[in-house]
Length: 170
Image 1 (tube, one colour):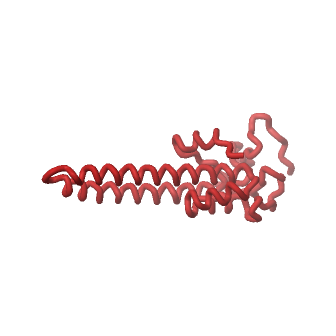
Image 2: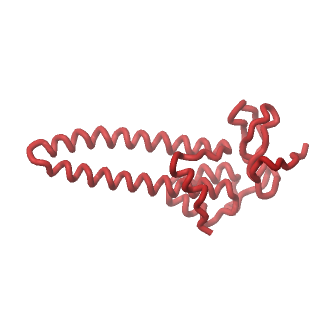
Image 3: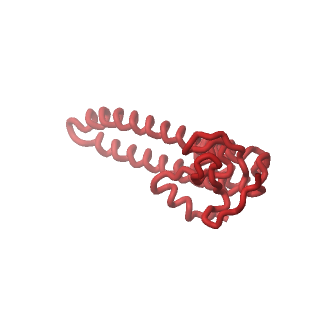
């Protein structure tokens, strides 16, 4: 069965044959109904096509999150596939935002630590709590992004995902 192009769908989207909801062409399963699918890459329309790096687009997109901005830059430079490039750009923005938050929190706790009498105690206790939740939150978001990318979903982080949609480095 060949898929007919739908003018309402983007180049990297298709309809699930089971539930008729919009999914990514590279998806290995429908995120709405769970039906197993044969991934179709947007560039060639072939289920066995590889991305610019020679890896399946879903795997390349998930791997772009592995070392945040480092692997994001590598995949952004190597890849031609729009799906992989989106995830590479999102992981770069996610890594930069995480570093900026980490630096901001470090400066904040350093300033609080200099408060007279109880500043060090407050900074120590508050920092331990904040760093724990920051670390756990980062880990959860990072894993979700990798899984969603592998499943063929173009999952947008709030703020970062919107920024990435409009970012065109080449």
